[in-house]
Length: 173
Length: 125
Image (tube, rainbow over all chains, first blue to last red; front, side, top):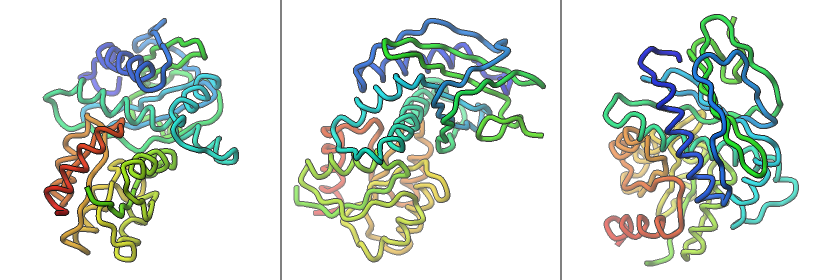
């Protein structure tokens, strides 16, 4: 997964646990892991909205959270329940909700993953707002967990090594 | 606690809106919101807030560099960084750059109040 030192199973354990807790405590959405593939997934399905962060340091990979549309819409409604959002702001704020979710969860998960190790930094999140497939080739490794909720699914993807991809998860030439 | 004029710096509009709501519910006034570090640095002297809440992970200019540049303009600036738990090194870098405190995401009103009060008591009274 980008480096031999990375334990994809452990990282997904942490992200999955943190994500379920965040969804329940912050958004009131029950989310449960239903499926997992470690390093041998041949294809990743990016759902309608995907937020991506690049990790550097020990973790040279991309983290991606890919949401079904009803789920991210429900998450937005819960996250923004204490503020007013105009109709023409809604699409932007839905995307920013996806970005904040990965930002908060991944940032906190690193504290669990790398308790005493070297610094791991995260890039600002970017958003891909189209469903697409990402095929595995070259020396890429994909690991993935699928969480299910009553509003749709969320995939957590680990995509590496980082240097094979640009920020939008296109293979570099 | 007295009413503070606060600058909120974050690249997420939804986070700016949520932070503004929390701060105003606590009785403070958000005088300016900047969507990146460069804008915060550019506007700081004009706005002259009592306190700045500063996101760390931002494109173009991150919160650490923005903190450093604001401190260069005003050595008495009071900046509180906002970040996730896993980014302790960045918090330490921000403190080294001059930040006076930090609050961890997800930010909740009671937690924000507690951290604000600590910073205000130490630096703004």
